[in-house]
Image (cartoon, rainbow over all chains, first blue to last red):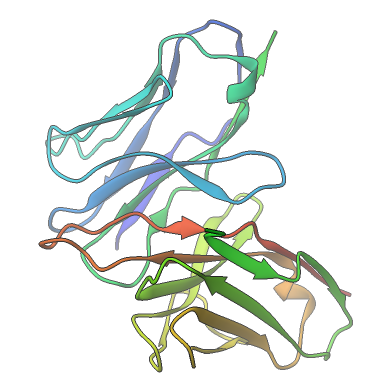
Length: 112
Length: 116
């Protein structure tokens, strides 16, 4: 069935390090792909999205490219900050109104 | 513009008690959703609605009921709470897809429910 696989962490990095969080999905058709971020005690916020193959979503220095050939949507940032510490969720919308399919989330910890 | 709001923020119930969680959105969205978030499980869809007066089951609907009497509100009910329903509950809403492209969902701040 439809699913999202992402590294669960926690992932601990030093400030200014390069970040990659891998995400692969299993879905039929042409889903829309999303990265959401959840800060402690808060709800989920959309970080970026891509709706078709080879699209690149970007926001706040984060980027992810929709790779249909590898069914991947890896999240990257060139230089992380302490304020980026949060849980990051990869998700897709598979072509119906029945909600998003989420990965289990990756807990990112950035140390000064 | 408040976006998606949820009431209450926290609640503690005893096994067998009932309660209703309220979700409200002021963005005129057609679609609304209830998810639960458990450690190591990500978010799982409980029920959803594609419009006023309609509801449908998601991945984990057992033990929950929902109603969408008004377009802006989506209620989640627990008739007889169980400890397994201890979780953080998130409501979300979304607008109609554009030309087959499915759009992002907007989330509320969550309700933390503990069932003793």
